[in-house]
Amino acid sequence: MNYGLYLTTHILCGIISIMNRQGKNNPMFGRKHKKTTIEELRAQKLGDKNPQWKGDNVGYFGVHGWIKNRLPKPDKCEICNEQPAFDLANISGEYRRNLDDWQWICRRCHMLQDGRLNNLRHDYKRITMNCLFCGREFKVIPSKSRGRTFCSVSCAVKWRWQFGRCDSLRKIERDKALEDYVRANPHLSLKEIGKVFGISVSRVWQIRKAKTDVL
Ligand SMILES: [Zn+2]
Ligand SMILES: [Zn+2]
Image (spheres, rainbow, N blue to C red):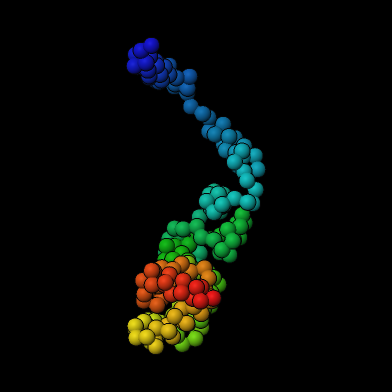
């Protein structure tokens, strides 16, 4: 069978049938939906009659669109009352399907509000860790907590100076510290441990192997 010819005919037939439905041949040619019909269609699709209605369990964009269609947009920002209203902003941060929880505000007020919200969120999420060198508490965002060991660069440098050098006494001290550190952070990889102590992956592996051999 000649598939090339078959496909060409298939595509051509499709194009011809589309062209046949354009212009005068279209059933809607020269006609328009009446305004009332459009309103009726819209009313049918608003609210819980809408096939895409998902109740209160919708994402941000769903609620945002829902509110935008219903909350009248004022001329001026609802916070500063100076700049023209531009953005529809959520007040509580919970994106409720409630007109009272939203307001029309200007770009500047929106940015200020977002900054405030983000700061709150970060403070809430931050976790406390103890510095390996000075023992002081410090706070980090969870995404940056992995492999983070020191409160400051100066603590990291001092730690390196004390344990990163390779004379034999310090080596024993360092190996002991490394063992303690591994026990306290069992989830860290050899590479991450090496980075903390300023040594290579294979060196970490050797130190750990020597320890387990003795035990
Ligand atoms: Zn404003
Ligand atoms: Zn420190």
